[in-house]
Amino acid sequence: MSIKENLQEVHSHLPAQVQLVCVSKFHPDEAILEAYACGERTFGESHVQELCRKHEELPPDISWHFIGHLQTNKVKYIVPFVDLIHGVDSLKLLAEIDKQAAKIGRQVNCLLQMHIAQEESKFGMDEAELREALARRGEWTHVTLCGLMGMATFTDAQEQVRGEFRGLRRLFDAVKAEYFPDDARFAVLSMGMSDDYRIAVEEGSTMVRIGTTIFGHRDYGIQ
Image (cartoon, rainbow, N blue to C red; front, side):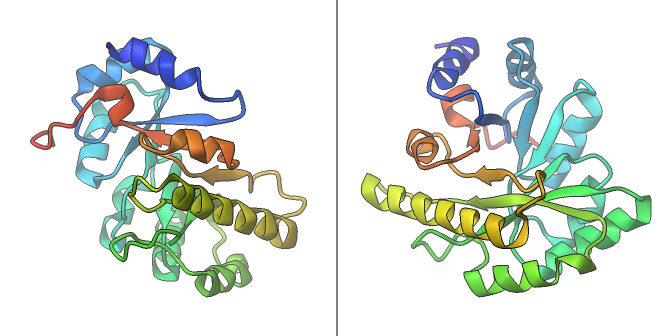
């Protein structure tokens, strides 16, 4: 199937209120432009150098999301243009984003990444770290907290995946009610990728990050 056909298939499973982030990391510009020609404008990257190059060379109306693990020493390179940082997994990273954003007078949209999987290799905050970040949110004047993000365990056990997504949705609802009841900006629950996005949508995801299902398997030689 072509990228156009793949996108049509993905969209057929997404309600209108769920935003699609086309995960374009390691995919060539030509593939991104093919999706762009189909009307897609939101793309996700996970390597700073690759993201910066693509931002410079591809159409200016693309909305770039950073979806990978972000090192504090790389923050300054993407803060000037990134539209959403999905994986804010520590107070240290949050403070650095705020610091770099303040230098250029920009508000940066961020999601707090929660560790919901059973795999130790995945990043994310636990609930205590989340509560500390929320209690101190007034310190970061150039960061806008827009919601939560999480990655489920990579497993064929669908009920486990469903349970992890359901738990994150409950946490999102609780945080929204307690800390952001009147803040319309806190509205994003980013969960679901190629293998599990349909389950994520059923459990309340408002944003899915899909790459392989759209673009096929990646060429890891691309930088």
